[in-house]
Amino acid sequence: MANKERDSFGSRFGVLVALAGSAIGLGNLWRFPYLVGNNGGAAFIIMYVIFVIFLCLPIMVSEFVIGRRTQANVFGGIRRIAPKSAWPIIGILSVAAVIFIMAFYFVVGGWTIEYILKSFSASFLASDNTALASFFGEFISSPVAPAIMMLVFLGLTALIVVAGIKDGIEKYSKIMMPGLFLLIIILCVRSLTLPGASEGVKFLFSPDFSKLRPDSILAALGQAFFSLSLGMGCMITYGSYIAKKENLIHMSFITAGADTLFAILAGIAIMPAVFAFGMPPAQGPGLVFIILPQIFAQMPLGNIFSIAFFVILFVAAITSAISMLEVVVAYFMEELKMSRRTAVIVTCVIVAILGSLSSLSQGTLKDYTLFGKSIFDIFDYTTSNIMLPVGGLFIVLFVGWKMKRSDVLDELTSGGTIPFKRNILDVTMFCIKFLAPVAISFVLLNSIGLIKFF
Ligand code: PHE
Image (tube, rainbow, N blue to C red; front, side, top):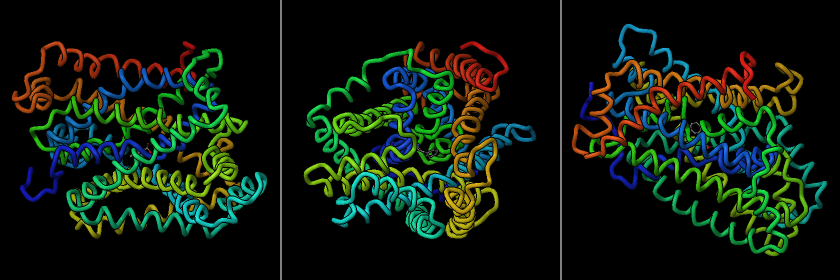
C-alpha cells in the first residue's frame, strides 16, 4: 500500500535536519556529558565512538532500508516484509520502547522550560550555590509544577506533529537545527576562553582507561543507541518518508557524524567550564541543571549564557521529542486507521499519564522502587540499556538474515541508480549480518552476567 497521499519529506536538506533533529537531543547535552563525567572522560568517549561507527551505523542503515522499502510504520513495515511470522513483534516492542522513553524524556523536556523561564529572572542566578542546588531538588520533587511543565512540553511537541511531516516536522527542524549549532558554538567559545579551561579539555581528550568501570561498556553502548535514536523504530519511521533517490548510506554517515560532533561540542561547552570553576564532573543527571547554573551565576553576563544554554537544551529536546511521537502516531494512523489528529491525541494521553507518574517518582512516589530504582530511572535505564540494544539486534538480524540480499542491495543503491563500489556494499552487509549482531550480543550477555569477558 505505497499510497500516493502518504506524507513525506520535501527536500534533502529537510530530511537531514529532521534526522539530525531526532538524533541530537537531551542524549547529547544532558546524558552524554554526565556519563562522560561519571565514567572517566576520554576513555568513555573513545569506546562510544567505536560503537557508533561499527555497530550503530549498520543499524541505522538497516532501519532506513526497512522504512523506505515498505513506506510504512515500524510494525507495518516489518510485517509487510515478513507476514505471518513472529518478526513484527519487533514492531510492537519498538512502540513500547518509545513510549517508555517518552515517559521520562518529556519530564526532562519540561525541566528545560522551567530553567529558561528561571534564567530570565535576575534573582535566580543571584542565589548562592546551595540555593541553586536545592532549587533543582525541590522543583523536580514537587508534585505539580514539573508535571505542568511536562504537559506544556508535550503540547508544543503535539502541535508540530499534528501538522504532519513536510509542514510540521521538516518545517520546524529547518528553523531550529541551524540555530542550535550556532548557539552551541558560541557557548564552546565562552567555555574555552575561561581561565583554567584546559583541565576540562584534557579530561575530554586524554584517555585514561583505568578510569573505566565494569558497567561503562554497556553504558556507552546504550548511550550510542539512545543518542542516535536507534533500536525503537524511529529511523524506520523517518526512513519511510525519505525519497527513493536519496543515498541511505550517506544519510546515515551524515546523521551519525552530526550527532557525534554535537555530543563532543556539548562536552566542550560544558566540561572546560566545570573545571574552570572547580566543580565536580561526576555529578550524574543533575550536572546540567545544578552545576551549570552555579557556573552561570559566577560568570559575567551569566543570565544571557544561561538563557542560551537552556534554549539549546529545549530545542534539542523538542526536535527529538517530535520524532518519538511520530513513531507512535504513524503506528496508530496506519495500523489502527486513526486520523493524524486522533493519533496525536491518543498518544499524548498515554504520555501524559506515564510522564506524570515518572515526574511524581522524583518526589511523592519516590518510595515506589524496583531494584532500588525509581519509576523515572527504570524507564531511563531499561530503555537505553536493554530495550534499545535488543531492538537494534533484532533489526540487524532481520535485515541481514530475513530480508532478501537483493532487496537490501536494491534499496541501498536506490534501484541500481547509485553506483557504489562493490566493496562498500560488501563491508556494509558484513557489518549488518555478522559484526553488529555478534558484538551487541556479547555486550548484552556480558552485562546480564551470563558470560564474563571483561
Ligand atoms: N536521540 C535522542 C537524544 O539524543 C533521543 C531519542 C531516542 C530520540 C529515541 C528518538 C528516539 O536525545
